[in-house]
Amino acid sequence: MPLPKAELHLHIEGTLEPELAFALAARNEVALPYADTDELREAYRFEDLQSFLNLYYELMAVLRTERDFEDLADAYLARAAAQGVRHAEIFFDPQAHIARGVAMGTVVEGLWRALARSEDTYGVSTQLIMCFLRDESAESARETLEAAKPYLDRIVGVGLDSAEVGHPPAKFREVYQAAAGLGLRRVAHAGEEGPPSYIVEALDVLGVERVDHGLRCMEDEALVERLVRERVPLTLCPLSNVRLRAVDALADHPLPAMLDAGLLCTVNSDDPAYFGGYAGDNFDAVRSTLGLGEERLRELARNSFLASFLEHDEERRARYLAEVEAYEFG
Ligand code: ADE
Ligand code: ZN
Image 1 (cartoon, rainbow, N blue to C red):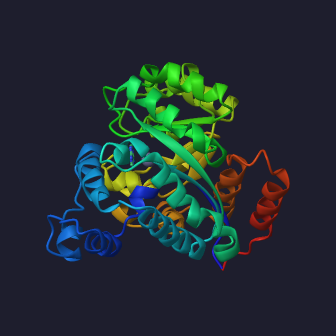
Image 2: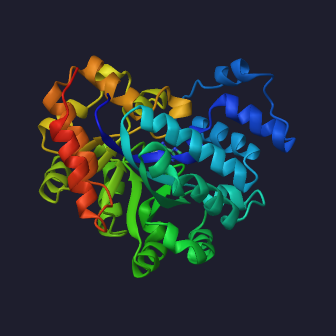
Image 3: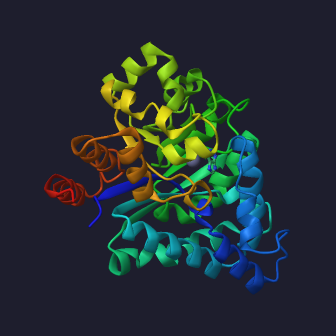
């Protein structure tokens, strides 16, 4: 039995495995510029975040109907459950779909069909976090929030993703303020490729409660002290950092140093179909390559539930935390 954990940094579009991409392409009569899944996998050699994003957005062309989004989410939840995920807070990128003529309602209703039965089918509780694309305009983000208003009972919070450098958080001050006014929780990618100042800005200007990645905080001692003091969770994604070359090799990943510094770190998969593994695979990788001991792994699992947006159901959080404390490593 795998260690129970929450997944807090997972882009549902990044769970599109090559086999499903081809199946959906056939179903929707969408032509893909790859002969087969092997040739597609050959394209998974990324130089940086942008080279990944180019493929990530290209493959979204196969997602057209509610059923496509349902199948995508269902496939993810099955894999996540098998790797010990008990609770998943799932990002989605509506702007990337709306731009292709796929409505907000198609995306949310489709994902929801899978999420609504996830607890019964897989024993995984779920929440949805709607991300704004930071390389699109602030106006587009505002329109996206407006389009989401009929679905807010299904969306726990907002996030910020896509190409980071050159798109600092402050650009989205107003839309985050509006989101907070609607009762939405706030997170943002910061310090993946961007500088530590973007992390500070995400906290001070956007009021985020968790930082996605946050890796580059380690370059700013005062920022690390602040993140420790304020117990700001960081949703790290070790295999993603290797594939997108945020670190040279997994052995060089700062996760052990971050835990030693007292940061509230969590381990997540980001875009598991592209980066070589789901949540449990990321845990296994840091265990074997970074030599994290059982108590460090338990701490990461505990942190994942502490950092979850489960304030509406503290009993559930307590149950999950008790599972972590009772877990016996094999
Ligand atoms: N969208 C999907 N994955 C992402 C990542 N790792 N960083 C920024 N935007 C993303
Ligand atoms: Zn991400």
